[in-house]
Amino acid sequence: MKLIFIGPPGSGKGTQAAKLERMRGLVQISTGDMLRAAVASGSSLGQQAKAIMEAGKLVPDHLIIGLIEQRIAEPDCESGFILDGFPRTTAQAEALDQLLQDKGTALDRVIEFEVDDSILIDRISGRFTCAKCGEGYHDSFKQPKTTGVCDICGSSEFKRRADDKAEKVKTRLSEYHALTAPLLPYYRNKQLLRTIDAMADIDEVAGQLNLVLESG
Ligand code: AMP
Image 1 (cartoon, helix red, strand yellow):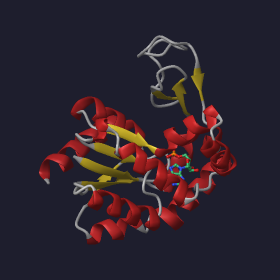
Image 2 (cartoon, helix red, strand yellow):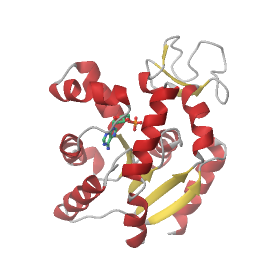
Image 3 (tube, protein in one colour):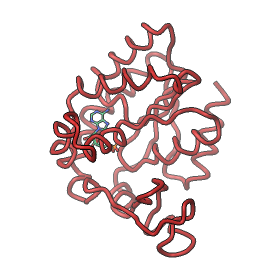
Image 4 (cartoon, helix red, strand yellow):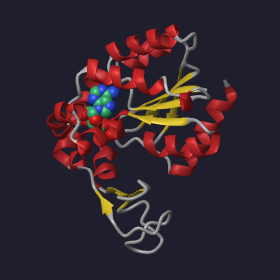
C-alpha cells in the first residue's frame, strides 16, 4: 500500500505513520526526519536546508524531490510506504506522480489529518522525543510512564525541535495553508482523498485510520 499523509504540523501524521509502520509493515518516510538527519550530519543538503528549516519555511522542491526519488527506489519500499510530510507543494505532487508512473505503480490513498489551527500551537510546543529511539512524548498528553525515562528504550535523554517554538509554528502553519492545502483538491479530483478527524486522541485517530484503509 502506498499512502500519503497530509496535515498541518502537529496534526499527528508522524505518530500515526509510526504506528502503522509497526502494524502493517509499511515504511514511514518522513522528509522532515530525513532533513534533520542531513542537518545533523553536516552534508551539503543539510547545509542548504538548515536555515530554511529553522525559519519554518519550506525547503526548495528540487532538493526534496531528489531525496524522495532515492528513498522510494530502496528495496524496503517495495512492499509499501507512508509519505509523512511529502508532498508539500503542487510541484512535489506532480513530480511524485511522474516518479510512481515511471515505476509502473500508483498511490492507493491520500489521508488528510484535519485539525483546527487553534489547538496546534499547544500541541506542538509541548512535544518532545527520546534522543535515542525517537519515541514521541508530550508535556500534557503523553508523559513517559516513569518521569525522565523513555518507555521504549530506557534512555534518559530527550530533545525538543528548534522549530517547535510558538513563533516558528505560526510560519509553518501559514506555509501549510498557502502551499500544501492546495494539494487537497488535487487529490480529491483523483478520488484518492480521505479525511479523518485528527482532533481526537491518538487511539481514536488510529481507529479512524484503520477504518478508512479497510473501507476503500
Ligand atoms: P516536518 O518534520 O515534516 O514538520 O518538517 C520540518 C521542516 O522540514 C519543514 O518545516 C520544512 O522546512 C522541511 N520540510 C520537510 N518536508 C518538506 C517538504 N516535503 N518540502 C519542503 N520542506 C520540507
